Image 1 (cartoon, rainbow, N blue to C red):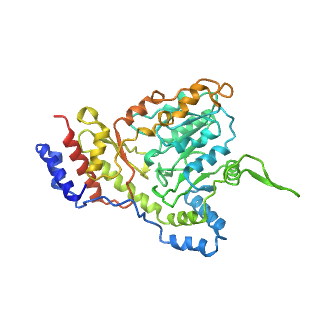
Image 2 (cartoon, rainbow, N blue to C red):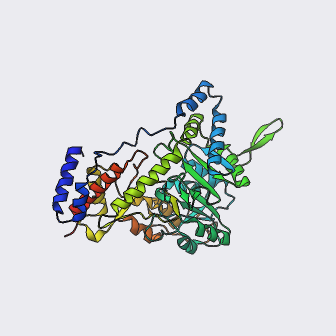
Amino acid sequence: MEPSSRREFLKSAAALTAGTSLLATTTSAASSAKTFPAQFPRTLGPNTAKYVQEVLASGLAATDTMVARFEGEFAKHLGVKHCIATPGCTPALAALASALEFEPGDEIVVSPITDYGTIQGIIRENFIPVFADAAAGTVNLSAETIEPCITDRTRAILCVHMTGLTCDMDPIMQLAEKRRLLVCEDVCQGPFGRYKGRLNGTLGHVAAFSFDKEKSMPSDTGGCVVTNDDRLAERVRTIGVARGVEGNRPNFGRIHRYPGYSYRMSGCTAAICLAQLEVVEQQVAHRDKMLRLMSKLVAEIPGITPLPIPEFATVYSPWMYSFSIAPGQFRCSADEFAKQLEAAGIPGAGTARYYLPAAGCSFLAENASAKKYPYSQPPASRDYHYGTESCPRAWQFLQTWIRWATFCEKYTEEHCQLVQEIVAAVAAKNRRT
């Protein structure tokens, strides 16, 4: 929507609720911002061109050196022993899954609201994903929703910090210690966020990150696995990156000890990632500040509930901004509400029911129903069922949840106010009288 059209939209919406003090206040203190900043071009570290040129000037000889430099610096920033760079986060999680010393049919408890990339490696290694439900009012699982899912075949928990909001990890780690389970973090949407002062990715036993171009620490692509576990790190590097090669046989050559993969980060990607480390923490701090302000402003609108930010989220590294609408207060669905937000100028606003992989990945239900390997018995030990009923609380939450993934480090206070104006105007236009 053009700025002039948006002003007319806001003006007409204000007229619908002339007696509402909130909207009157909102429109009288209108934001000076007319549009939202474009996500691209992204803000890159000042040495990006320098580091990329080092790789190019070497005739690509510096590729491995640059990857190693990035791995060392990222590990140093997080305070962990090992970082294994990969070409993306889905490959990072796949490399991690390939390194797990589990058996086909073993179970991994997974966050209910996430992307296919979270489970791709689990599926390919013939482990069975078991989706815990969401905690009340949020996108994340919790120790309370995980515990009923644990069986004698459970081997690990995979926690997704969805939208960048950290899961409540201390109770999860306590549960995992009691049940002797590995805890993995999917930090694709929340790098350099902090939980009680501790960095995301250092809270469990192992973690995976994303550096795709639209994410909070952007490169052209990229990802990595981090851990303090020496054996696990070596297996990720050997099986996930080095194609399963373990040594050479005299007069023969390399031996592929495992059916491995070649999930290797490129030298130029590593150069961009290395440069991003010089600016990402300041950018995350700004994102955190803007998101908290936006949530405060949007929470003033009746019927609108921003995703709650718990006290333990001491730094929120948001990739998305989101809120829920109270369905009884509006004449339209969340889908129509989101379409009106986008038409009014919020790019990419929409619902996201596909983020429920128990329903969105139809092959899960099909394979489980047909008892296709690994759902056959053995190696599986019981029947599995996938669908919206697998995670009813998460599914219900997604019915009224609206998000957009263009929240970026370029937002100002005026942009936060513009969000409030647009959401308030759409709410006013659709509010039941």
